[in-house]
Amino acid sequence: MATNFTGKIEEGGEFEPEANRYILYVALGCPFAHRTLIVRKLKGLEDVIGLSVVNAYLGKDGWFFVTPEECPGAIPDPVNNFKLLREAYFLTDPNFAGRITVPVLFDKKTNRIVNNESSEIVRILGTKFNKLAKYPEVDLYPSDIADEIDALNEKFQVGINSSVYIAGFATSQEGYDKGARLAYKSLLELEDLLSKQEGSFLFGDRITEADVRLFPTLIRFDPVYTVLYKCNLIRVQDLPFTSAWLKRFLDAKGVRETVNMTHIKKTYFISVNQEAANPHKIVPLYNGPLFPSD
Image (spheres, rainbow, N blue to C red):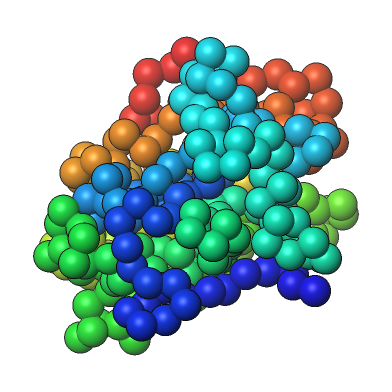
């Protein structure tokens, strides 16, 4: 009885790196799925790894697939014609007992999920498909700074990526205060780090996993987390070095194409799991400082 899937892709293994063998199931609004889309773009894997995009919001039966006519940006499942993402999970393990989440890396050859852990999928796409990638020279996890990347990933996974959810899903004042203050403190630490950085990104002029993992949260911070989750002690646009980093990363090859503010806002403001915070499903017009408002 699985609670998650953590398969690996490697030469000679059960799941080998092959073109057109795998497909990503993602939600454009989910920051954890967004990571994998960015790596797919940066490595030039669009013709190697397939893509299917669920509806913009989470329904009562979880993530579900629709046509682009029903939801612009959606891509139906071309493999099994799944209507619900949960079908992929229970096809892989009929006794699956975990959460039905995106992203999912699915193997068309064996017709089952390889992995559903975003950080592991990021590493897989970033390192295991170099022979097939359009941009194999893009190294998001250089060996000379791998330990430093891991440390920064861990620090900001807790301090930034997770803290907004601690605040947003809090059911007590104490819980909210903890998350909101942690996000505030961590953003100031990030600003200080970037103010001392000589290059364009977190580790000089090289884009790394650390940048990839932070960007989805920070592009959502001002239009979503300051509003819905009340993480409003500070905004990203109030932090000059962080704002400049965010703009530089957005302008990196292909990254802007992975950002869909309509899906992002609907994921948070309309999804069934957000009804306590936004019972009337009102979607704000604001898209953050880097995109025009609706």
